Image 1 (cartoon, rainbow, N blue to C red):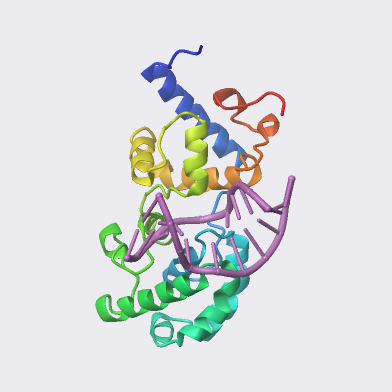
Image 2 (image 1 turned 90 degrees about the vertical axis):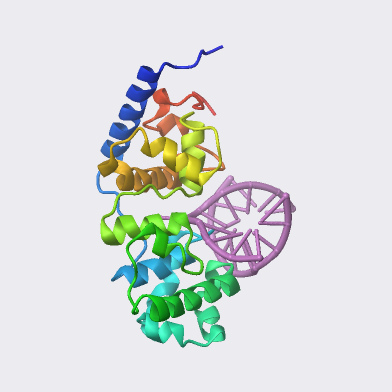
Length: 218
DNA sequence: ATCCCGAGGG
DNA sequence: CCCTCTGGAT
């Protein structure tokens, strides 16, 4: 049986994990196509339980028809639903983005707010979506915890929880603030390319020797 | 805990 | 067929 690592060993392992991810994904960036904070907010809401690639297929037409909060706030639900159908959860997502746009118009002068407290008052915007917008659009450090971050941090033995808030707190507590946003983006890239949920490619994983869940052969 | 919901991979 | 995809609201 492997005994639990000391605080120092853990700290060092986290540093190495961050370093190897940085080397593997030096140019990590948000993959959601967007021209401004409003578009990013819409795209991020649409990305729930859906690949970013598919979101990018529907947003050009959506933003052409509804380019700003004012037009989206006044959009017929059926028309929005038709635009975003292929992203799944289309009725709930249409309700969310239209309601979000209306809330921007009535409460925020048509502008996307830049605080966690304000963002999470918007329909369809939870902590994960808010963290994406804060980090990518406003450069405010945060750690969006999605399905990939949840899976990988648990496999790595850095956390033992599926509670996003708890994961965010525990990881942020041990990683420099300026690295939070990129770490999240890199974990997501890693989760898509290597540490795939269904069948992790442990043989070609740069975190192989740092991961208690790694298998040497499949 | 459950629902929302389409699309692609294995 | 079953699982998963940058979740959030009830």
